[in-house]
Structures are given as structure tokens and as C-alpha cells.
Image 1 (cartoon, rainbow, N blue to C red):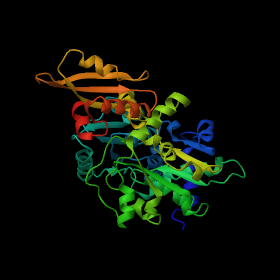
Image 2 (cartoon, rainbow, N blue to C red):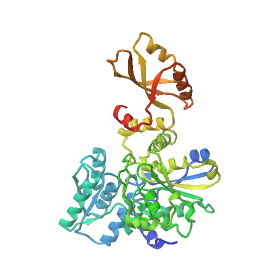
Image 3 (cartoon, rainbow, N blue to C red):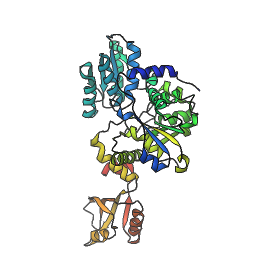
Image 4 (cartoon, rainbow, N blue to C red):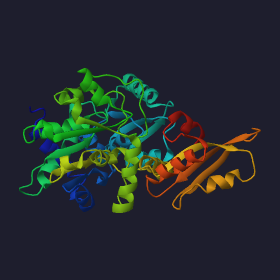
Length: 419
């Protein structure tokens, strides 16, 4: 079912060459060996703004401006990659742009957006959350007659993002066919564009969509048969944490089954970020790691021998987040756990506990939670180890020695309060 005119996408791709060369489609030897398959990465983290978002923004500007000078003021609301792509396009076309960002936006993202837009953009910090920021942008458009540049829900944005697929088609080695194409989903612009471009070339079953577990807007919409608004989202994967998929995007994607949408735990994404950084030296943002993380959740036998293309959507990673990402990755891998211990208030009790630790167990955190108890004291302890099975033996020794404990590693409420 054809949902996109490839000729328009090809023209958009040709226009993009005034900005940057095609991002590489790289055969990744590490992942290929790991999964016994041919794994290609489409490196959208290597665009000038380190994400694919510049493609849609550029195409939107091109269509509105039409090649001539413009006195329009363009407007966007974003705290991330869309703002940077928008700013880059403003400077390229020499037009004025107004960027609305939440007050809570990290300074690093504000600075990068200002760098890409230069004197052509103005940044306004409004509201504590995106919804407030977006409302302010809409009000500005109404009051001034400005032109809103949407992040994903527009035909020209979808067409621009589809240039990712056009480049993949041109870059795939001769004779190679794609068995599976894996792409992240936030608002749906990228996935609508890619699936539309390949509609006549690949069967519907070849596409695998991946969303953060805490923001399943496409999966819930496909299950319901219409667009739904999620009551809440986990914003950890900020580049794909969208509460409502775009109307135009869902129209292009509603032909797919909800079973083709894989929900990826946020902590699994953290493991992928750490692995790609340590092994490959590739810096990925959480949304950029989604497709690679999804691959790790598939049965190995189901993908062995296949040719698989993974869209790496972005690399705008704030390294201030690295300690948290590493922490979550270790917890997901089963290499770190947190316990609340109930130790008797007697001499030698702590020494007895330490003797229960194995040779590869290391105490990463130790904190008294309640010091005034007469007979017992409560302790928060974090333990790191080298293999997840080490915890099986450790917990068995806890039980055998009558040690009172509670594993709070996966207890989100307690973990958020005290870890």
C-alpha cells in the first residue's frame, strides 16, 4: 500500500545535499557477530545537528519559502532535536525564527540551539513542561501570524524524514535485500516517512517499530484503532517520549499490527548506550539507542542470517546523565541491587554481614536509615557484582543466616525516594 510519493522524497533528498552529504549506512561488525546476522546502522547521529530532525524541518521551510526571500516568522516549540533542526534551517534560509522552550530545558540544549540558529532565532523560555511551552507558541502564532513548524504531524515533515529511507535504498550494497527494518517511534514522522517510501519495496512484516516502555503512543493507538492520548509518559527517552502520536502519522501507520511495535524498557536502552560507547565509541542519546536495544529483545534464532537495518536516530547525549545511565544499565543487567537490611544492634553484626559477601561482590552504597531502634537497625546497601548469578548465591546466604532484608531494586517508589 503506497502512502508516499517517492518522487517528492527524492526531490527533497536532492535539496538536502546543499546542507550535508548522506549519513552513512554502516555494516556494524560488533552487532553482526553478536547476532549472527548482517546488521547495518543508518547513522542519523552524524547529521550537522546530530539527529534526523533537520530533514523534516528543512523540507518544511523549502515548501513554505519556495526558493525566494521570506518575511515570515517561523515558530517551533521544542526542548530538543526539533529545536536544533529548526534553528539550523532558519540560519540556512536566512529567515527569522522563534523557538519556545520550557524553563526546565538544560542549558546545554539552549546553547546548542542558539549556536545553530545564530542571530536568526530568538529563544523564549516559557512554562515548566512542554504542554505549557507549546501553548505559548500557539498563542504567539495566533497573535502575530507566524508560521508554526510542527515536529512531526505534517505531510512536509514526513516527506523530509522519508529521505532517510531514500538514502538507505541508494546505499544498500547491490544484491542485498532488507529482511527487517527497525526504527524508533516518537511522534511518528520518521516511521511514517520510512514505511511510506518502502511501501512497494518491502512487505509490511519487514518493519519493526520500537517505543520506550513508558511512552507507547503508537502501540496503544494501533490497539485502539485510533489515536489516543496517554495519561502519562516516562520522559527518560526524551526524544521519543510522546503522549499522542500525530494524526497524519497514524493515518500512515494504522495498516500495521500492534504486534509489530516493541516496547523497550528504559533501563535496557541505558545498557545499549553504555555498550555502544564502550565497545564502538559511538555516543547515542536514549532515542538513538532504541532500535539497537530492541534488537537485543528479539529471539536470536529469529534474526540469525538476516539483513537488518537499524535507524540510529540521534546522538545528542548530555554527559551529565551518564552516571544515571550507567546505574540503570547495571540494574537492568542484574549487576547491581539495592537492599534494605535489618541488622541486630549488637557488636559484630556488621562483620557477620560482610562475611556473607562473595569475592566479586562490592559495596557501592551504605547508609543507616534508622539509627534509634533499640534491637535492630535498618540499612540501605547497594551491591555491585560481576555476574547476575552471584546475587542468587548471596540471597541464599541471607536466608540461611536469618538476615532480614528487602530487595528494592525494582521498587520504583522506594528507589526514587531513597536511592
